[in-house]
Image (tube, chains in turn blue, cyan):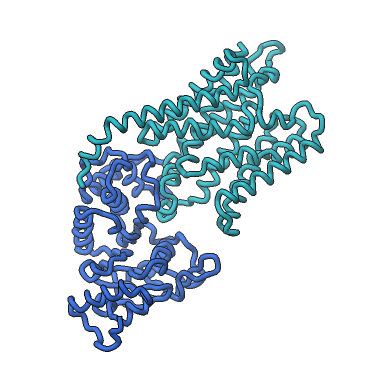
Length: 262
Length: 293
């Protein structure tokens, strides 16, 4: 791939001896909105954390634009799961978004005018300007998710990794995120998103990675969302699989006629 | 004059503990503060045994390092040995505290300066026995006061200098790490400051009740404030008011000064809690109405 944003090479990550990711190998195209899908416990979050250097892989490596992560920190931004922090923390929307401007090198300096301008702009982009002085506990779940996305935007990165940004958000937030993704794509940014709702994947994403400890499939939604791939990834979760099979039928994706013993 | 020095010294103990306690509370690590305050005992004993002086620099450093070792062991047990977080705290600090007890009962048997009573409860009323006198007869205050004020200076400078680091570590450690910030170093930096606080405080308020100063004022402040700088200031103020109020309560009822201070801080916490609940009842509806969706 000549325009590759993220290369994951033979990656294995273990947790207490058991592999969570096993020999994952893929290259992701730059400038696209990419979805990571797979059942619960399939290692989606672990993959994101390993790419971000938060977990040490047992073997294999990750390259961002053909460089080591340490050299590319400035160009890659991470949006953790909303539930991973305590929103009772005494901070306002502005305080949290400002953290997107923190760097190892500027931790001991005061925030400057550029930082303030970038923070204001990022808050505006997610539509939270009226709430910028509000304490983060006094926001709805969707607004909290948008705070996290604004914080990543404040990093002015080229690659964004988002862990389940659509979970538990209201329609307004979902639309805000989707239009933001369109804008980011137009600017040539690469966005990697963990997603669990199979009904929306083909609408949201240009490219998909289907995961269940191993890499099951990667490619365009049409290539990935076949019955064979999905049954390989989701196994016995029949109701879900039946639902997806119907959906695929409705969307007229190519599926084989045999083996419909759902 | 004794009264003045007691209140002043106890207030500084309370401020030191309250400031660091805020970060422990926000990181959900308050009980690590508890563990450290007990586990520094063997460090104190070894350093005292070697130096023969309760206030030597060696003792401060030795004991502080024991505290850092404690936090390292807790992390090691919970991450590497996969023992539940609270269990690894329990294993580490009871073990170290027990070793310290044995050391005291063997090496320091019958010693007048350090015994279990002193370690567990401290005695702020006795700090004036260890005076600093210069020029032969000029009394400039108890030694404990100067030890506390130096610790206070170290803590203030560290927090001002590392404010952003401690803040992002407390709110979202993973995210800080994703920015390339060395969260491990910040963690041990914080643990060093917590150890220092409990080591210098043990003589004044004892190993048990210093935990009260670490947790209660920050918890009160978190109820009342919604920005970190205010939380730190309010926690320190609650600590000071507890120290002053506790002293007079103790004099009035003729009871332990430290205990009275913690009781007062508990009362302040209860009042704050009732106030916040009351305010929520009245104001909650109007807040949610303004939230779109």
